[in-house]
Structures are given as structure tokens and as C-alpha cells.
Figure 1 (cartoon, one colour):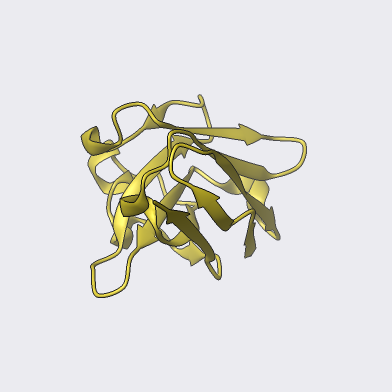
Figure 2 (cartoon, one colour):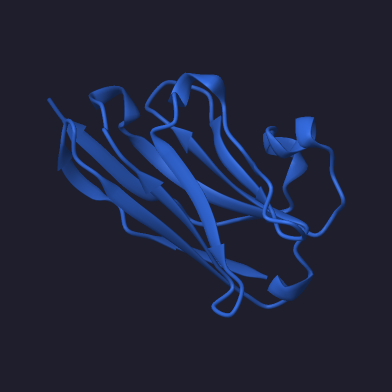
Length: 126
């Protein structure tokens, strides 16, 4: 399985970006996919997850509805639409996937995922 993340870049505060994560290999057997981010000097944190079977989505409370995760089954791709971006959203964003039937709590944890993309840099200027 390979995950290819793209769509990062430089944007002004208040702007939007859409990240993409294209999966190849055993993508058709994914149970869930997620997005995490890591800012310099900080731990990698959960941003969003989607359960492949029923498209249930999960987010951390601190996002306040600014981000939306979605998927395209035909393209084996998951997206992260990011709106109202803030400088504190600056980070490397990673997509991840798992074939295992994991709980909602585990979907929000790094250890819940078996496969990781290479990361894409998002920089939000003030």
C-alpha cells in the first residue's frame, strides 16, 4: 500500500486549501483513513478520520468545523478541505490508512494506522 499526499502550500490566514491522499495497492480493503498534522517541535496530532464502510467522519473539537474530510471510492482518494485557515494550522499534514476494524477512539490515535503518506507542508501566513 502506498499513500501519496498532495495539495499543501502557502496560504494567507482566512484562506482555504484542499489536501488529497491517493491510495494504491490494497486500498479497496481499507477500514478507515485519517489525517494528522505535525508542527515543528510538537507531537503529531489527529485532524480527521473517515470510516470507509459507511463514511462516518470524526474530528477533534478544536477544529470547530473548519475542516471536512471526504472520500472518492472510485479514485481511492481521501480529501481534507480546510477553510478559515489560521497560522496555528501551519504543519506537515500526513494521511494514514488502516485495514483493521478499529474503534472510534483508535481512529483518532496515531497507533491505529498501518500505512502513512509522506506528508505535505501547509503554511498559513498572518
